[in-house]
Amino acid sequence: MHLALTTVLLWAWGSLQAFEIVEKENIFQKTPCPAFLMFENAAYLADMSFELPCHCKPEEVPAVVWFYQKHLGSSHTKVLTDFDGRVLTEAAQVRVGSDMLTRFSIRMFSLLVFRAQPEDSGLYFCGTRKGDYFYAYDVDIQNSEGMVATFQDEGQEPFADEYYGHLHVFTTFWEWTPCDRCGVRGEQWRIGLCYLQSPDLSPRYLKAVPDVVSCGSRAVPRKLQTKARHHTPELLVRSCIVPCEKTKTIREGVLAIINYVSKVGSRPWVPQVPIQFHQQRLGHGLIISCPGARPEHAVAWDKDRQHLYRTQYLKGVNRSMRVFIDHGNQLHIRFTQLDDRGIYYCWRQGVRVAGFRLGVTSRGRYPASLSDPETRSAVELTLIGYLFITAVFVTIHLCRCCCYLFQCCPNFSP
Image 1 (spheres, rainbow, N blue to C red):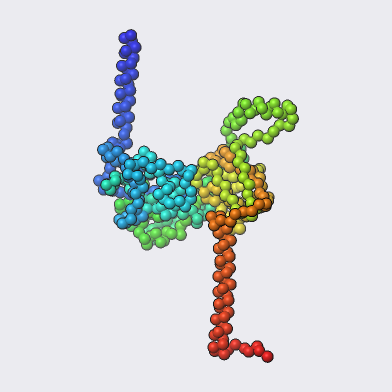
Image 2: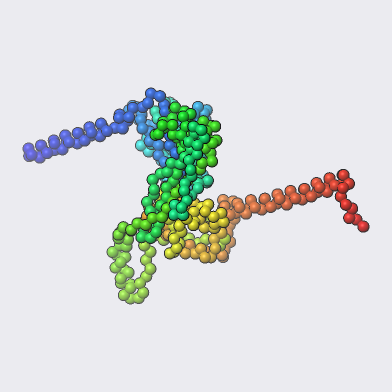
């Protein structure tokens, strides 16, 4: 009895010690808030999701409020919370182009922004509902539209550094991604964002390296931003090959059924990954996304046994491409044709995770909608053609009127 009581007391004392250790590791006790508000610079590529932790806050503050300003001192400030510090958004429900207020979430005092866009660049403040700020970020979202791909296997080199007096513009590359395939030749890449170095930067912005910030930072004066505007993000791509890990992909129950059926007749085809079927109308566009993939992930696409490498299918490699992979790792098929039928496999972080069986049909009516990009393109081309014909018609009649007034037109009447 005494032994059991002693054990219980020791266990309780150990639990109290554990709670005491956790309390001592409180990050907000270890990180004092700065006396003068500074801005920590952070840069990301468009369509990426990122997290901004609130590194410090007074212990008596139970919840934080996040604020957003486009420029420092702007009269228009967005409040990114419900004033209780609780806003939850599922990343899977966020679409490209959604308003910023529908693309963020607050969890454990940190601000999460999903599928960030260049217009989300600005200043983010962590504070209270009364407007007391504790920590701030200077966020630069760089556009991926003008991103330039560099293929090392073809002997290409990244952009050279640019110098304009004391201004130094260069590219800072992230770490290499894992190989996007296993067992066969794959590819890996690293994203490079635009950075600059200058002694003329604002001292109120924190810098990991002295006098170095991203090109779109608010610390950069307007005249320097103009010079660095043409230095676009880069994508460095190279080949790789890694072995596949030996994993058990088929359950024992399924194997038993296969063995039984194979004794009766021919062995059935069992996919190694989940397969989703989709029927597409002939001549219409299609965009396929890899489940659970983000722009910073290593994602690859195969059609049946054909590997769709980025050296041939990356967006921008050829302007007339009908099938291409964009910088967000999505597979685009423009004007679907009958030979596009097949199974498209998706690799994520070196593992094949899903397949899409695409069927193409020319039968049935397709309801036209302005939300369809192909319909919008057709309407735009029709309007442009109509405006062109109208302009030609008006120009011809103006010329005839001028000739009639100045009597310079030949008389073709008999």
